[in-house]
Each structure stands twice: as C-alpha cells, then as structure tokens.
Length: 427
Ligand code: AMO
Image (cartoon, rainbow, N blue to C red; front, side, top):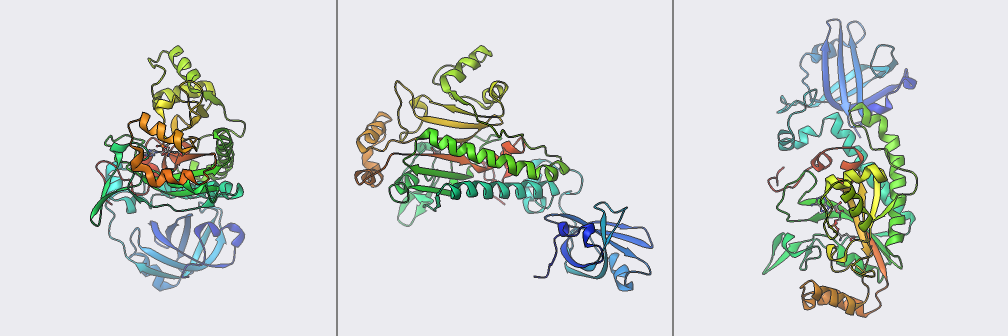
C-alpha cells in the first residue's frame, strides 16, 4: 500500500524512525519560518512540521497551495516533542498531494450543523472525528457480538431479503416488483432462522431488515441492521443468558473505547458486569402505575416509561413474560395470557426482543388463526414443522439502536451511516 503507518502508530517511542502516513489535511498554520500541517486519518491526527533550513525548499513552497481536506501522503522522520499536541511530530522529506479537495459544503472542524444538513452531505460529515469514533466503536461492538456467538457454537448464515410472507405484521412491508409478481423486502429473518434450527441448530445473521413504518421517530429507521440468533434446544431464559454474556462483553468494549469517545464529547453508558435484572411485565406495569403513569395491563411500554424504570432496575434490564397478545404469532404461550418472551432494555430503549417459539405445527396454526392469519399462506414454512422441528428460542437485536443506547446518543441516525427514513432515501 501507499500508506505504511496510521497516525496512531506515530508515537514518541518512534523517535528517529522514518514513517509514511497518508490522510487528509485537517489544519494548516503558517507562522513564517515554521509551518504546521495537521493530517487526519481514521485513527486520529498527526502534526507535520515544516521548518525553514530543515525542510526541503520545495515543500515549504508547496505548503501555500494546500487546502483543507486535500489527500496527502507524507514521508518523514518522527521526533518526540514537548510542544506538539500528541507529544510527537513528523519532519517531512516528501509530501505528495494525491488529490485536491474543494471547499467543503459544511463545517466539520468546529461547528456541528443541523442533522438534516449533515445527512444531506453524509460522506463529508463522516470525516468528522466524532463520527469516526462512533463508527469505529460500532465495528468493535459488532466484532464482540460475533465473537460471543461463535464461542457459543452459532454458525453465521444469510437468508433471503426478498420474501413473500410477512412475519412481524402485514401492513409494514415494502413491495418489490419481482419479475411477474409482487414480493416484499424482509422485515426479519424470523421464519428462516427458525427453520434452520432443524439442521444447523444454532444460527445467527447480521443483515438489513426493512419496515415500512410510516412514523418518523428518533429511534425508528425503515432499514436497520438486525442481529438475529436462533438456537435449537434452548428456551427464552437460555437466550437471555446469551444476551447477558453479550452485554458483559460489550462492557469491556465500551471501557476500552471510553478514552477515544470522551475526546470527541461522547460519554459511553456504564454497562453492568453483574447479573441483569429480569422484571416481569406485570410487575413493570404495577411499578409504572405507582409512579403515576396511566398504563394498563396489555399496553405497550413507551420509551419514557422504560427510562423511568431505570431508576428501579439500572440502565440494563429484561422485561419478561409479556401478554401473548402483544407478541407475534410464533411466540410460545405460557400459562394464562402470558408468553415465554422478553425484551432487553438498554438506556430506556428496546434493544432486543425474543422468545421461546412454538415448535409444533398444530399449535402454530392455531395461533395464526387466532390472529386472523391464513395458515395456507404459510404452507412452505409450516411444512418444515412436519419433519423434526426441535424446540427453539432466539433473539432479534437492533444494531443501530444498540450503538445509540451505548453511546448515549439522542437519535438512531447518529449511529447509522446512511439512514433510510420516511423522507430520506438518498444519499
Ligand atoms: P422486533 O420487531 O422487536 O422483533 O425487532 C427486533 C429489534 O430490532 C430493532 N428494531 C428497529 N430498529 C430501528 N428501526 C426500526 N424500525 C426497528 N424495528 C425494530 C429493535 C428491536 O428490539 N423477529 C423478532 C425478533 C425475534 O423474536 O427474534 C423481531 O423482528 O431494537
């Protein structure tokens, strides 16, 4: 590669060594006989110092032609420095401009323009150090989740995103023209992941999910990244145990990223490393009523309510045993009107939900009819249940929301590279 070192590799310990960094011109300061060029890359910044008498003449001249965001390659010698910001500077022997940049359409250096402007120019906005920190962190989170799932013997799979049946409610599908017929974008890999437990036993998928929800809130997207897992021979308590392992692992990830995040004004959520409370839905409703909320048994809980419950249970808790009527048709019932289901709440947001599933065909058909769904439309799914479907359980986790919650962000779009919402399909 052209680039041999990241800015973060340029440390005082490298004093005297030659490095080749590449990145973008962040700042130019011309003090006459001394000139400073600060180069940014994904990992941070490095100061390049040009000095009359020390730096080749043609580089001193070329400095005047540089613009912010020009793409540059710098070869030079590292010197530890008491004055430079990161304790180190590069004295260049060579600066190559790989591409020129026009003046940017928005300020990425100091002012943070409104979100709509930033999303309009998203790829430019992503150069902002705060965004580099957010999306580097998001990648670390994904890697940690994958790590736990692989350790637990899940295999990673990909299921179709063009489908013909609804799983999470019929009105929220995007139709696509599929040759001579209408198909839909997948809302969730739900049915496929369940089917796969009959062969691969433990599967997970990380991919996009599409919801044609018309409302436009701070925490809903029409395309989000869903982390889905499903396991044969497990129930919902086993799956909560798995999610708990993931949360504990994420506590480590957040701790190691904390310094970089704080440097860009983000204070990550303190995640528990102990047992996560499991709160029964009925108890949650009672507590909320005691707090003065007008909520009845059978209602969905709002973000505000879930935030209030943090006072009792901390920043991370499960709500378990929801009324069956609040959950999708494939959810296994428990005694009474309850179901073997749960939500994982982090920082007041519903981050994951899941359940033990129905694994007998007759029960599943009955549940469909109860909800006014026609089992005949699900024949290709139902037939799988005739040939050895094991008991199984799983979760679906909203990745964009998870990052939003972990970083205390106030809008899921901050944790989404190119958000798709009611009024945004570009860029
Ligand atoms: P559910 O519909 O609750 O469950 O989705 C699972 C998780 O995905 C996230 N999520 C969203 N994130 C951003 N924008 C949206 N519009 C959006 N909708 C959902 C949430 C949510 O908790 N098949 C089940 C999962 C399962 O039972 O395994 C399902 O899709 O964080």
